[in-house]
Structures are given as structure tokens and as C-alpha cells.
Image 1 (cartoon, rainbow, N blue to C red):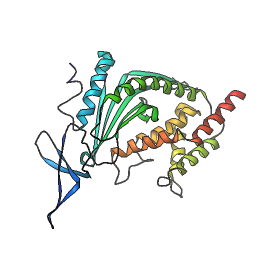
Image 2: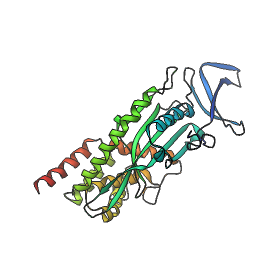
Image 3: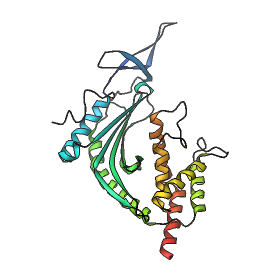
Image 4: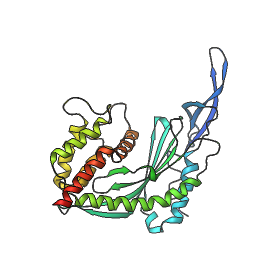
Length: 305
């Protein structure tokens, strides 16, 4: 019924993956524990190299995951919700790593800060699949800020992982899909709480950025203009609009996770997949002791005032 809605025929992620032998052309030796994966595009039947994987590796096509996921969406959501769905596919490393993002503009809740600024937080899902043995198949449930397209994926409770093995099944995604709706409501409520909590000092914001950046030594440079300094510069812009509250601090982190701009440019080796990695990093930051301590310190200030 909704096949046109999900653009089955025109999406780049719907390609085939075939396996071939790994052979030494010099000595004519055949590997008995490795195989080569090749991407085959359906439009012109051309093939290109993807990776070398273990011989027991089970190829799980994107279509095997996305079709059942989309069928669940059709069963779960009203037609009016599905008609406005936004889909974005990201294919990196020639298809070795793929992301499919589903954004639901109709499913949104408004967050209002103490400055009167309002922003709509919407529901989204991201499917990640790989064809290089680098990771499991992952379904993320998360949120997106429609005011500035800041994205966030949230925590292990919203993630379902399945390995590339012969016993792979999509059944585990079904319960995760429904549970993520409840998690989304909890996330929106938390965001509104953050919007209501004023920060105790600008110095506290600097300190938490320094603490978070130190957990990622590759990103934090010991020089002026390092990651923590850039985060603070972004916070200055966020707080001008949203006010000096915890939500502005979160928006700073999600901006870093979602934007390739002057403050947070992608490196020459980076691609759109790098932004998803940043979102995974920010998710870990928001589950860290440094962040919890920062939030609780500001909660205490609010209670005692």
C-alpha cells in the first residue's frame, strides 16, 4: 500500500551484496577462511569491491532490515503520519557502511525555554548496517530539533543490535520499535526539565565542556580553538536564543553532533557518516558522570533559590 512512500526502487541503499573467493593471483592460493564482498548495483548490474570478511560472515542486505521495519511503521502509525515521513539514506565507503534515517514531522512536542523560545522536538529512527565486519546491525531511536536540525540518538535502551550471523532475525526490532516511543516521551520531558533549569554560572559550562572533551583525546587539541573552546563558542550562540539553561548546553552538544560548519568542520577524511559517529559520542557524553554531576549541581541551585 505504501511502497511508493518508502521509495523502494530509487533508494541507493537497496543494492545487492555478493561473495566471492579470495585468491592470490601471484601464487594461485585460495583462502579457506575469508571471502570478498562485492556491491552490485541493480540499475546497471555493475560490481565494486566492499571488503574482506570471515567466511562465516552472514550478509544481511539493507532491504532485509528496512522492509520489515517499514511494515511495522505502516501497522503502527496513522496514514497521515506516514504521508509526511522524511527519509534520508547515507552510503559511505562505497556502501560498506549505510545509514537510513526516518524522520516523523507529525510526531513532535514543543519545548519552551525561559526566554520564551519554542522549538519542536520530533521522533526519528536510524538504521545502521555494515558490510565490512566492523559492527552489528543497529536500530537507533532518537530525536531531532526542527528549529536547527540538531539530531540526537539516545542510549542503550533505544538500541537493538543483531550480529551478522546465520541466526540473524528482524524479530528483535519489533519490540524495540514500540519501546522507543515511550523513550521518546521520556526524552521530551527531560528536555523540558532542562529548559526550566538555569545554569549556576558560565564557568560551570566551561568546566563540563572541558570534562567531556577530555574523554575524547583525538578531538580535544591542547591549543586555543580546541573542541571545548569551540563548544563554548557555540553555547554563546545557543544561549542568546534559548537562554542560559541546561537545554542550551544540550543544544550545543547536539549542534556539534549534527553540523559540518565553520566551528565543527569535517576533516578531509570525514564524510556524512562522521556526523552519526559524533552523535554516538554525544550520547556517551550525556550518559557520563561528568554530565550527571553537572545536571545535579544545577538542579540543587534551582531547588535552593
